[in-house]
Length: 271
Image (cartoon, rainbow, N blue to C red; front, side, top):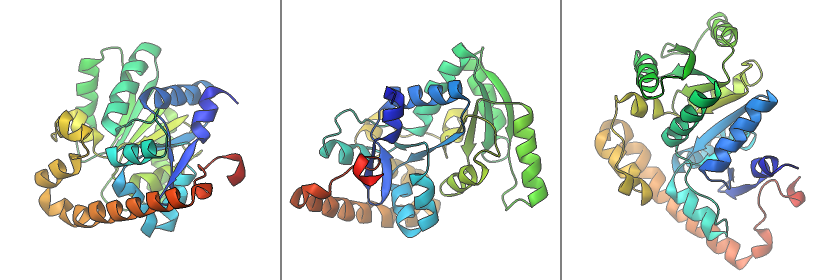
């Protein structure tokens, strides 16, 4: 197995979700490998919110565990991985991954497609990134209506994306919509890579502010986002932050008491 193949398969079970024990360089290398292979894969950018939603939704948990890669998007997941001895693991944050892959794409000629975002955001994103990376090739953008598409509309989306032959489809529909969309369109969308990046469209387009780096490094980005959008996010964070903390501490204690059960997903004993 290649080193990239090994990275794809090394998962650690974090409360039922197999999170890839990787850093940014690993994620970029894996995506480039998929593009070279012309295989079809999707990437879940997952933090505490994604893990907790997956505990309540079996289908979402299955989608994560069948993804080509599940990046540790938040510092709590990185700390969990490191406490289990995965010293290589580091945060692979959606906006940072998007910016990194965009820079690589401008050099190598990988074509991008932006699907999702509020009306006009994908166009602003395109302008912002082309201004920063003049050689970037953007195959297209599409903002779907804020409702479930009819079968005919959905097929039209698939045909429109496939017609321009992108290498990477960035999906900005928020969790869990983007994960469901990627899983439902795997192999129908012929691009080698689909990546669900949520609010990264807004951040990179400049329509929403990102938390300062010091807050991101210290696992406090949730508090910045809560202060920025309290009416939309307070219910989410009032539950998930304390619930994840309690469950994660309990799981770490269980692993310490019963180390024989601490088997990474994708290891031979679980295949």
